[in-house]
Length: 345
Image (cartoon, rainbow, N blue to C red; front, side, top):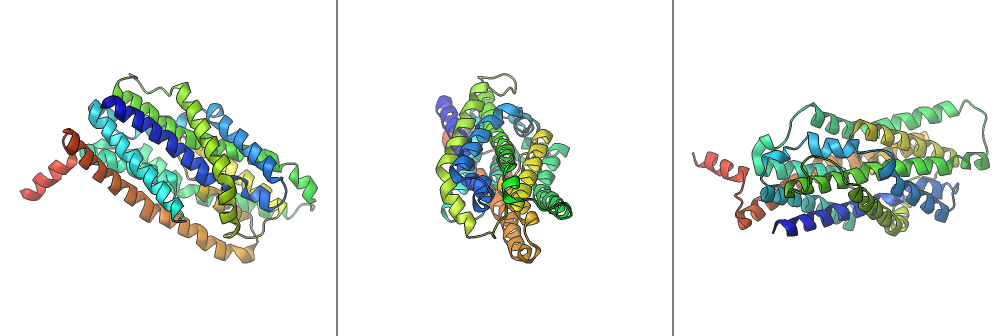
């Protein structure tokens, strides 16, 4: 049974990575395509290259923070730990897929964090999570990065207006670089979420004795992300075009560069973030003032949806899944038993 859970969990982690590329791929190339600064096919090639190389270029700070610093995996025995991780992954993947299918905004990072928090609390109670400065840093950065993307983009766009106007041809020279940097940041951040989970699964099953991200998991996550981007980019670009405003080459260059810089900074800090929210907020900051109000409501709606719906829903679903699966498999029901004992007193 342990081997089945391990294989199932690794497959889910890679599918989660695939869904991340599938959902966010269009957001990576949309600004370049709609500003007509980069041909769609070239934009897709650059995005795929950055997506694949990102996990190899930026290390594993996010994976270490997510997989080793926040959750008390060592407090769970092997089978129960595998059930906990699989419950978190099923919840996160299911909510990511369902919100995509329903056309609703939702942060995959929020569903993943919610699923992990729900699973570990269900298994160990509040002791399952290190309620420390590290977790506070993750949640704070996740909340602040869309604001940072907007602010950086807004300031750069305002500063550039004081300089000599440049033609679209001149601006387009930097578009490929900013798209590549943005894709590198996205690939690294999202791949590390998957590799953190794979490493935790290997630790829980006894195949690893210390937290060390295997190179093969990085490769598999990079492939899954890139495949997801290739398949999903065209469809999501079409959806994106109906919800945003006309984009100039200057706005595309500034928004892509700002979003890429924020993503890279979050990666070096070891914090998982929502690329979708950063890209939209950065594009909003670079947009014309007369359109910022309506588009701002869309971004705020996305953020609220992620925090108030996706995050708690994923946590509750993961907890329910753990209690059910652990009970069926005979591993006990973790904190549910203690809750029932407390209620019965």
